[in-house]
Structure formats: C-alpha cells, structure tokens
Image (cartoon, rainbow, N blue to C red; front, top):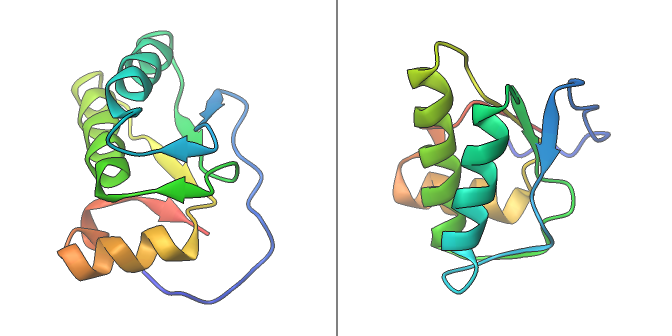
Amino acid sequence: MNNIASAPVTPPTHSFETGATLTHASAKAALAAGLARIGSGATAVDCAPLTQFDSSALAVLLAWQRAASARGTPLAIVNLPAGLSSLAQAYGVDTLLSARH
C-alpha cells in the first residue's frame, strides 16, 4: 500500500459508505450494516466519509472482506484515509486490505 495522496476514487455502483466514525463504540453496528449490504450484493465500500477511527475499523473492514469473499466476490475498499492506511501498516494487515486511495 502506498501513502501517495491522490484524487478520491469513484466507488463502483454497488457500493456503500462507512459512516464518519468507526471506532470500538460503533464497530458492532457498522459490522452488521455492512454485512447486510454485502449480503445484498455490494462489491465496494467507500471510506471517504471516515474521519474518526481506531483499530476496530480495520477489524470491520477485514470482516467485510471475508464475508464478500465467502460470497465469491471481492470487496473493494476505496478512499481509505491515509491515517487508517498507516494504522494497517503498523499492525501488518495492510496487505490484507484491497484498498484503493
């Protein structure tokens, strides 16, 4: 994953957005909402609204990717904030996220 700033990526048609906050306090609800969207055919998640996050956001993103993979479809993660990308690198999970900046 690189940290080069670029213009936001336009998410695919079958996508959903994270909320502005994805922390330990909101992770359970966000996980459930995302799983429902993936179950309905979503193939991408747009992280552009995400401004407040912690390591729980990484856990949720990875769980969403596993759920999509189980359905036979990869989940694209677009517009991952640089700070969350750095956190993923620090935890060594950056290679597990299929993120586009």
